[in-house]
Length: 127
Image (cartoon, rainbow, N blue to C red):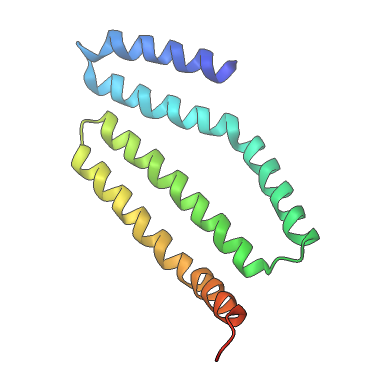
């Protein structure tokens, strides 16, 4: 409820300020976005601990687990940055941020994809 309330109040203020002081409105948007993220840090930490426990219990290779967490982190960070760029009216830069995030994610995912392909090929009987 705090996040929703903060978001609605900030939205109202940004709409009011946008006409007269667009720079202040943009800074308010960025600030509130960061504050909302800080509200979520505890929950993110709890989710990471829970995922790590599941990975440990299921004996998943930690290299793959850490890579997947990096991929998720990059996706969220790139999305957050792209949204801020769009809020500033910079759609072209936002698109480039998203493209960069996707390329980094693909580069990180290659070892996982390779392991999956090798596992699938291992199940195929050779004749």
